[in-house]
Structure formats: structure tokens, C-alpha cells
Image 1 (tube, one colour):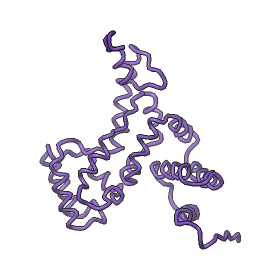
Image 2 (cartoon, one colour):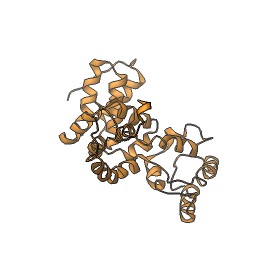
Image 3 (cartoon, one colour):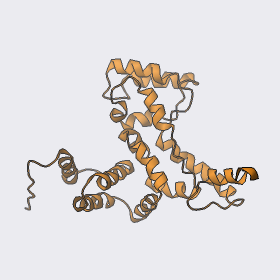
Image 4 (spheres, one colour):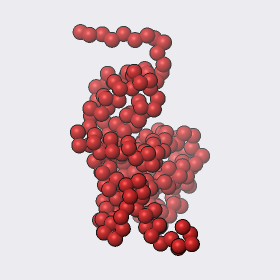
Length: 234
């Protein structure tokens, strides 16, 4: 037996990372792998970072690892994905590393910026709601439009009041969320929906790219916008 001994004065953050390291577990979600790699890179000293970061890289198939490496070269996209990490439940429910190459190839870099604001609205008046939401809840109500569909209204209300979603929230908090969510007239957004949209968007962007040349560092939207600028605006 080999025993690793650590000082009792280690920080809470390092303690958590050590627990992660030695805990037996099933394969983590793509979202958790991404979060752990980013967490190690952004918060740990270089001497510790490599060891813990490599542990999470090891969960990925070599092809998936290459796709994630390509993403990390696109600072605009990294910032957008990092912003979604404010809610691990939302992030883990939808992150698809295998589809990242399509996000990069379409040059459509605007990760749905309305996802977090929408969920902030749903959880308005609920303490630390974004951090407490779980991926099962996100999976249950994403794609629903309770403000425009009677069936979706009944479905979401049933999930909320029946306690089959939003685990860990009190009855009072659920009552607040019913008032916040049911009037929402758009499709409830999620990272999963973003990646599904990319599948359809890819065919459209491939067609447009026959008409314009998109620079590697520029989005398709920006390229198209530049094509229609008046000469006196340049």
C-alpha cells in the first residue's frame, strides 16, 4: 500500500481537488471535464495544475481532446463558455465536446448569451439559484415555451409543484419560480439546445461560405455585415 500524507492546514480548494482525485466515479460529463480543466488552469499554481489538469484530460478520447484544444485557442469562445459555468447544472446538462468542431467550423461564435439572463429571470428572488440548479431540472424543462403553450404551461407547473424538478428548493421558492417561469414566451434556453441548433446551422453556413470568404478570426455574422457596409462607412 502507498499512502499519501497531506498537511491538515491545506486549503479547502486543494482538499476538494484531492477528494476528486481519489474518489471512485463513473465517467464524468463533458461539462464537468471542461470545468475541472479550466478550474485547474485558472486557480492552481503551475506545480499542481499539470497533475490535476492531466487527470481530467485523461477522461477524453484523443479526438475529443484535440477538439477541446482547438477551442482553447479561441479566446472569444472560451469567454462565452466560461460565463455559462456560473451554473454547473446548466453547463453540465448541455456541454458536448464532440460537437465543438462544428461550432468552430460554422464561425458562429455567439454562444447563446440569453441563456444565463433567462435563467436568472426564472430564479429571481431565489438565493443562489443558478448555483443550486441541477442538470436534471435543465433537461426536464428545456425547449418548453410555457408562455405560449398550454401543454408546456401544465408540464412545467407539474414539474415545479410536483417536486420532480428543481430538487433542493423550498415550497416557497417553487411558488416564486412558478410566477417567474410560466409567463416566459420563448423556448426555455440551454446549452444543449445551442449545440442542437449548430447541427442545423452548419448546413446553412456551409452554403453561405460558397459566397463569402470568412477569415479564421472572424465570425460569419461579422463577415456578412462587412459585405453590406456602405462605402462611406468604411
